[in-house]
Image: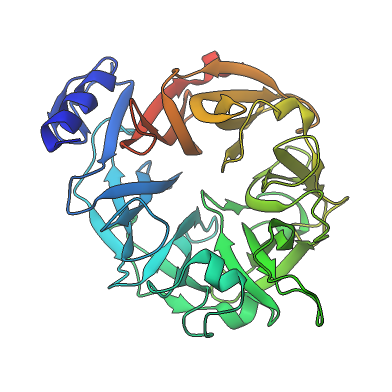
Length: 396
């Protein structure tokens, strides 16, 4: 697709506001949709892996992976950011938060520390010369393999500190693959762990000694959480959901804090033999343990194998929202579901479009508006990353 074709596509998907420049919608109260990222622009072949938060000043931060050479998961990949001060209608210039410089930096998991207002960003890294499969097979050196980094911004996302390696704090020696989020992390607001930052994550483990397995088998995927009680300075391992039996292969995960203080976790099932594509569970101790192991969430069987997002709306009776594609066999038709019972059941609230769609992240823009930052396109799933503003009244 040419740059001109992408620009025409960007114009077509803006619902009520015209483009003024590539990826930017004109300001105004009628704004419904904008395009912070259009693949092929800004020096990148493809933008993927959206993550978004709203800062205490009301600024919407839209993170993504800027993939220099292709849409593939390996190679020269940066973590990039665009900021919006008008609720996601227009966007400031693209900035590089973590430069790959030939290597792979990604899986952004941002969160705001509630005590200080600091934006904390946790990301993952590996050498650009190795693939996920090679890492899972144990063929990468420790320096080449997956590592975990944290950065902080004290000025509303304008500038970030250099990435600081926290791998030794959060990755056991027998783990190979490792990924934070992707999508926003959460800051706890209730109970004895108020102020804690929790990052839902996933990993793969090495096979047991003497096993004929290589470690690349999907059954070695597992989910876990990491947390910080000091605004991201030090980090600790939380729960580990690691059956490694091939039945439920927890993978990319998302989390929300429920009104009763429990944490709700929802995970992609990476080709397990169980009956669904989504798994979930709850934690009553701030993410340190799960109340029960991840099990299939049958109300979300329409969602294919893909990353997804959850967001708890505030207030008594506020729903728990879930976003993801809604065609079981394809990454297509982004939709939002709601739950009024803490994730026990879900019902579909709305479908955004019938276009191709994949990864997404939900954010509260203001008390009347929810935003969803998601990958979408007409002929290709990763043509753009769109930001759609959704009235809370439309979500039940």
